[in-house]
Amino acid sequence: VRIIERLPPEVVREIFLTCLPRDSHRLSSCEVPWNVSQTCRYWRDVALSTGRLWAFLHYDSDKYVSLRTFEDVLNTWLLRSGSSPL
Image (cartoon, rainbow, N blue to C red):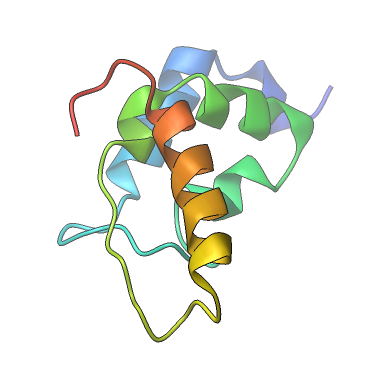
């Protein structure tokens, strides 16, 4: 078992929340929560079960080529936010 998997999910969750950008969340795979949800299965499970990671976002209209792509990403983001207030 890797060291990170020895940490309880509650601790990992708090680490992820501490890493969130302070101003807003950009829909970018280089930032939390996207990057931590794509690192390993354990981190993905913790990230996807933490609605607060997905409760804020910033839309950058220059990033998306099509409205359809943005709609798909936005739907995923909203589903992951769960019952957390946006």
